[in-house]
Image 1: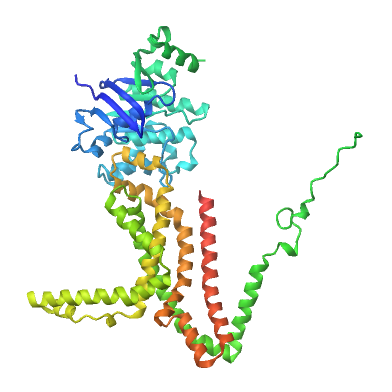
Image 2: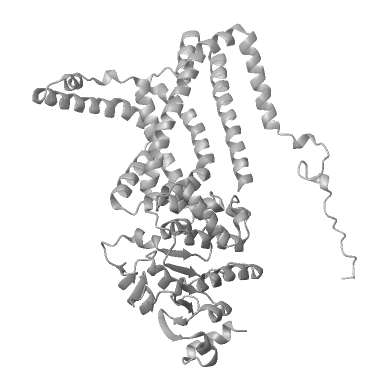
Length: 244
Length: 292
């Protein structure tokens, strides 16, 4: 079967800094892949190249058979199929939780207000906070905001979900509520690419773990493999720092 | 050094800071500036009602008050529309809108409003009228019809000086508003645009539904302040002899030589408008701070 995400020899420069230095990656339907690595290793940049929030300097990105790095591809149509969850949530502060979730359905999918809000409520129920539908982001806790952000991405019925350090900005007691939503999503068969150092999540849900360092994928392994026998010295060193 | 007792430097008592701590009444904590302005205003209001020279001056000037408000409101409406679109263009990555908008903003902001007003009235309007007349002449000889024949007889004197003042002020303030809108748009975090784009929205959709609603809320207080500044600058229309408040004041002065009464009333009328408006803007600012 064709991979749903295909990355070939991806390079990304910011000025003279090469953040990603030649990454190849295949992700298949239903797979959950976790990317770990030290800060500045290019994990987020790789993720952001996959929905073209960053334009790759060189290389190819294919999403669901569409060539993203090709001029004539409708990037917006591809993005609508790829959900993204950000570290800082990035909810729209002037809209209620329900409006946050429903807005893109109305604008991008051209649904009526009633249709969009019905889907929105369904997604808010899925992430466990239908009672906060009328609340503004400023009135929600970090964990609740991130769950609304996940619901917002899910409402578009994406084929892939990208998570960019979804729990890094959260207080410890709120991490679990977000991870639980992500675990359910993984169990439901969603294709997920997750940048995160939550090893509990990786162990429970991931089929593969990629270790990135200095813009390259240094090691690819399974959750078990990571604990028992990391092959690379750099991976071992990094793990000794994040596993207390 | 002996082991001197630590100096018991007591915290100054609360009443040493008037108006901030404690509920004791202090004369020095009253907003005297406002009391003085209000007292002066009430005195003038009384004079306008009771003293014939003041009363006559006020009656004469009140027509100018309406013209001043008309110039202010219309030119500011023009300025807001120009400013919104120019501000958007200033944040554009596309070189053409960016260049055109930046050229406009930098040029207009570098010219004194009074010069801009003279330039608009005596250079631009006649030039445009001439151009239209020539085009109308060509059109009439080529196509005919009443549209082109009307166009070929157009003359700059058909454009009232008040309208020229409004256009000049609108174009001048448009450049200031553009910078306010640009700053407002750029003050919205990058994450908002990214979140919107990641949902599949196009750039214009994200601008319209996500960025602008937040930016406009944020720039309402500075826009309000510029409205007040625009009201004051409408007095520059006096150089075009438009019968607004300042111009009528000057006319009144030269026909009656009652300098004192005339400019007291002129200043009083401007102050009554600007202070009322700035109180409204302050209320708006407080409301927004509360909501954030």
